[in-house]
Amino acid sequence: GKPFRRGLSGLVFLSAGPHRLLATQAAQQVALNVPETKVTTLENGLRVASEDAGLTTCTVGLWIDAGSRYENERNNGTAHFLEHMAFKGTRKRSQLDLELEIENMGAHLNAYTSREQTVYYAKAFSKDLPRAVEILADIIQNSTLGEAEIERERGVILREMQEVETNLQEVVFDYLHATAYQSTALGRTILGPTENIKTINRGDLVEYITTHYKGPRIVLAAAGGVSHDELIDLAKYHFGKLPGRYQGDAPALPPCLFTGSEIRVRNWDRSFGGGVNLSSKLAQMACQGNLCHSFQSFNTCYTDTGLWGLYMVCEPSTINDMMHFTQMEWMSLCTNVTESEVARAKNLLKTNMLLHLDGSTPICEDIGRQMLCYSRRIPLHELEARIDAIDAKTIKDVCTKYIYNKAPAIAAVGPIEQLPDYNQIRSGMFWMRT
Image (cartoon, rainbow, N blue to C red; front, side, top):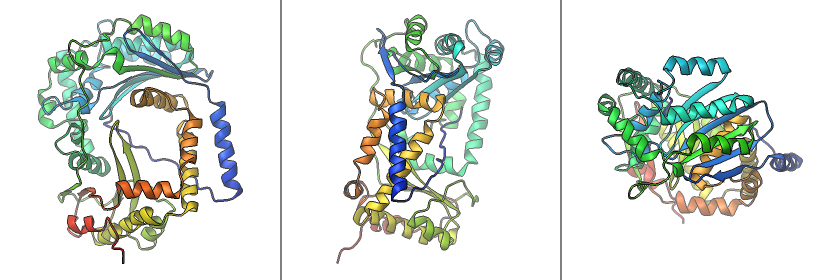
C-alpha cells in the first residue's frame, strides 16, 4: 500500500464573461442530476452509505477511522503493517485462494493507509456486490496474521520505505509534518520508523484491530450500481457481530497543534521533482525568471487541523528569489486580491471538484471520507453554494487570520545553503505599512 496518494488535478481555465455563466450553469445541472447519498446506521453503530447510479460496475469499501494518528511512538507503523497483512490469507481463504477469486470475478481489491483513515475497497461488477462485501468482511475480521507472512511483509515494508526515501516530494511532506506537528501523532510518518517495522509482532496487530475496528468507527460505502437496501442486508449479515462498544472509554483523537518551525536536510542531491505550473502571477514570474523547475500549491486537511502552502523544486541559486516572490503573493492575498481573481479560482475549484468525482471509485472515496469527517455526505449543490458565497473580502479575512504575520512551517531538502534563514522568512509574513 502506498503511504498516501497525492494526485495532481487537471486544470481548466475559465475567463470572465459568458464562459463563467456557462460553467456555473453546467455545475448546477450536474449537482441537480446527482443521485442522493443514502445513509443507514446499524445497531452496532456501523454506517452504510451509498449512491446508486445504476451502472453495471460498482466500488464498495470499508472506511475505518483509524490511521497512524491513533498510534504512539512504540507502535507507529502498525496501521500500515496491518493493511499489508489484509490480503495474506484468512481462516477460510489462503492468499492464493483470495487472489484467484478476485481475478476470476474480474475485480480489483485494494487498500491504503493515511494519517487518519484505513481503507479497504473492491471494484467489481454490480452483480458481484454480495461477494465483494463478503470478501471485505472476511479480510478485516478473519485474517490469520500468520507468523511467516508477517516476516515476509516486514521485508516488503522495509523495501517500500527505501523507495519512499527516493521520492523527493514524499520525503519533504513527511519532514513538513514532522516539524509542523512536532511532538504530536500527526508528526510521525505513516510507515513508521525502521526499528518499529523490525519489531512489530502479531500481538501488536491483533491489539490494533480489537482497539480500533469497532462498528461506530467503520463506514461501508458504495457507489456505481448498488442497491442501498441490498447493501444494508449484506452489512447486517457480515458486520452485525462487530463490537459496537468499548470496555471503558473509546480511544480519543489526541489534539495535534501546529508549530511554526523549520527543518532543513542538506544531504540530498536531487534537483528535479514533479509539479504543475499554474497560470497565476506567481507562475508567470517563476517561469519568466527561471526561478524553479516546478511548483504546486497544496491543501492537506485533517479532522481538526490542516496544512496549506506551496511545494517547489528550485536550483540552489534561485531559491532566495522564489521564496521572496512566493511571500509577496501571499501578502497580496491578505491585502489586495481582486474579485476577478477570486471568480477565476471559484470556477477552477468547481470544475476540479466535478472532474474529481468522475467514476464510481472517487465517488465511493468521497462518501467514505466525508462520512468519517463530517458524519454526512455534503451534497454538491451545498458545496457549490459554499463556494459561491466566497468573495474577495472572505479571502482577505481568512488570509489575514491564518497567514498574515503568522509563523510558517518550512521543510527544505537538498543543497539549500542559499535558503534565507528562518527569521528572514518569518519577517516576510507581513508588510511594513508606511
